Image (cartoon, rainbow, N blue to C red; front, side, top):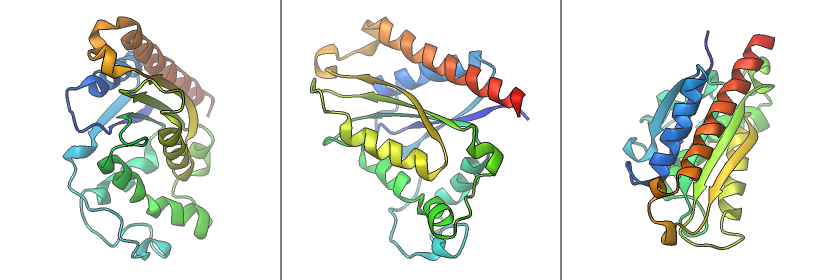
Length: 202
């Protein structure tokens, strides 16, 4: 079985700067021989977590929507790329609600002490975070990074690397800054290479 990555687009702009950055990282991973499934979070049909706690006893959520199939996908992947802009010093609402619905994984790992991810995969799963911010502030990614880190931990993914681009209000169009686009490609390529390498060792 080949290496698989999920690429999450958290931006509500499906062809904006964040999407373009993610597409370059995906191309890099593809060129490393990795299968990538891109998920545009704003195109999913789901509700925010209601803390029903059904998942405290079960391996799924009581709410039946697009998240039901997502849970299974995340059990089998080898890596993840999250691309999102900063909004109100954090991540966009739809992406945050998506992450909050992973209480299913949280309960399995921390309450029932039985992660939904196999022991073998838990050792090798890697995550890449691509972030952009309109503001040019030194701490602008702090909130988003904490959320991404927490999400990766819940789903048994190691925070491997990131690419964080500030001052997008000045840059405006990332295609005019090819060095950033190429860095996203290189990180996607390296992520794919590492995951392939780990797959050969297993």
